[in-house]
Length: 326
Image (cartoon, rainbow, N blue to C red):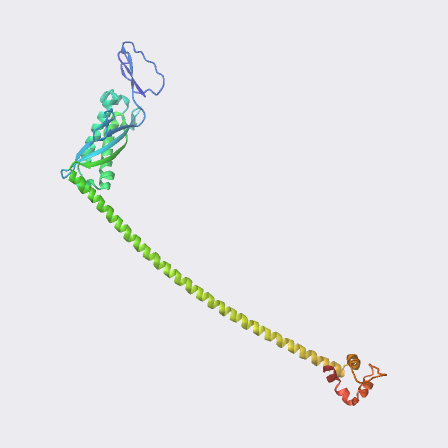
């Protein structure tokens, strides 16, 4: 974006509204108009030991802790230049590009140096309230004092048309080597403690797992035995039921056979046509007799048949059912 400046005449001075990217009129003769360019993208202002010689890179911040230790801190401020002033009601929330040029400077190097100075001041003030031990605590350092410094820097930059996007803390070291070594030992000790704690927790979980496996194995074996026992019981009950049903069936068959024999005996002894039936049954037997001849035999004359066989007719009548049964 750009800010137009008219050098003389009735409209002399800076225009309050920034020019958007594109083509704009200009009268370079006699410096009547000048356009100052301002980047509209996010810019980074680096305060680092690895900084070069560019306009947006500066040396680190030297912070003195509450107990006198010196800490060298790397930090980065991400900023954006606003295109026009912002207000909320009657209160100005943020200035615009004209405030930046008139109050801070016309060159980018001026803006970045001014931002660097405010960031450095606020970081020294905020982090300097921590002791050496507290500086090592990330909650107190990053989530506490760095956020406090970020808020203060944003309040300082806003009236000049600069929006602070974020304030980032990078690497830091203590100036005294013995402190750095103590921190390294402390880090190693903390890591060893976490490692031992993790190992203990792992061993405890492994023991619980083995106990759980043993319990489950015992339950599986118990269930297997119970299953086999239940199977034996069920098979025994099935065999018993089969035996009972088979015996009951045989009993019913025997009863039915006895009843059938009784009904047949009754029919042969007293029923009509019984003598004819007996004769028909004896006919095959007579044809199978050996040792003599039987002639002039009427198979339907039961009485004559009995007499020829040498049996008393009266006795034959009483034993007619026996002859059939045998």
